[in-house]
Image 1 (cartoon, one colour):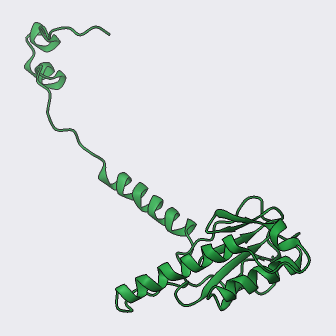
Image 2 (cartoon, one colour; image 1 turned 120 degrees about the vertical axis):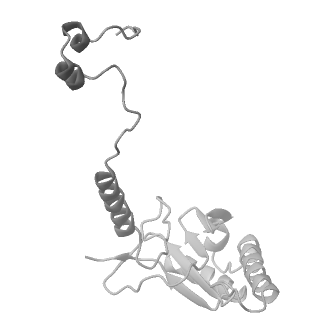
Length: 183
């Protein structure tokens, strides 16, 4: 539709003031009414939806897509946000970063994984440094010696036991296991 300059109006052509008032005199109001009630309702529904979608504890545990966690009948919710050790058939990861191949620990009699131990010691040292620098006001789960273990369902128990041994040697005395809640 082309833009045209306003011309004579219908009401003024016929001389009828009533018709001219009904059809307008060529000026438009600068006021655009906003329908605030529907907009507030929409935002309220969006906020309620987002609150419902998030965890009640506010903690999330991201599970590697390659890892199939075991199922458990009785499982407690995650408290805090401890560092995560992920064990698959190929690699061992700390906080999502691959640090060691499982072939190192899969050998008979092999209880040493230097890169895993170093990564865990660095993580523990960082958290204790934060605790000391804040005067004990900021205490993380890793400073308390807590670690979360995500082990694939097909990983042999001996491998998990060796990883737990290295974690305890690095200063993590308590290990919690990530599981899927059985229905």
